[in-house]
Every structure is written in C-alpha cells, then in structure tokens.
Length: 145
Image 1 (cartoon, rainbow, N blue to C red):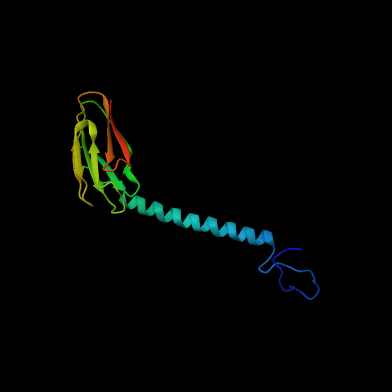
Image 2 (spheres, rainbow, N blue to C red):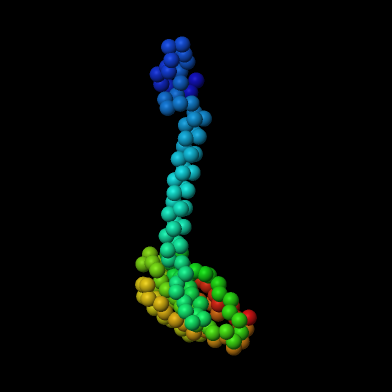
C-alpha cells in the first residue's frame, strides 16, 4: 500500500499505516517546517539589516551604508548645485567593499570599519558618476540632475 509501513493504530483497524501519520500529513508537516524556518531567517536578516542601515550623515551630506550585501542605497540622486558630500560607513567585515572607487573622479578611498568616509561629488553639471567596491563586484551610482 505505501512504503512507510508501521504498526496498526487501533484494534479495529488492521490496515497498514505509515509511521508518523499519513503521507499528506507528513508532507504538510515538512512544508510547515520549511516555511517556519524561512520566516525565522527572514526576520533575522531584516533585523540585522535595519541595525546597519542609515549611516549618520549630517550637514546636508548623503549617507551610504556599506554592508555584506554592498552599498545601500545603490543609487543616489542629487540636484545640480546641491552639496555633493556622500558619507560612506562600512558596517560589516563580511564584505569585499573595503574601499570605494569613483572612476570618473579618479577617487579611490579605503572604508575602515564603522568610520565614516566623505567623498565630494561635483554637482555643477548634470551627469552620472558610477562607484564600485575595490573588486568591482558592487556597482552603484550618483545621478546629478
């Protein structure tokens, strides 16, 4: 009848039953366990991400947090003539983004752990500046409009 053969459950029931319940019950239990584990991991990741988000930028500067997932936010939009200070704060050692590179500006700066680093981006003209980690794996941009 089924490969999960076990002991009969009741005296009046002589049919063979799977150990641990019926096959649909076991599938349902397995799916529930996976969903519960995924929810727990998701909640954990969200709480960790929110702890590192929002590097403190003051005096009109724009904050970029550097995590194990790269730069956050991945794109900044500045208005022409607006102050172009961008403050990078690396919050994780588990990242290759230990430096930031702005190729168009010939800027390459180390990002020490938990120490803000300010990069000045010119905002006189409308254009896009790309920036990456030292290995070029994490790519982001600053758009001046």
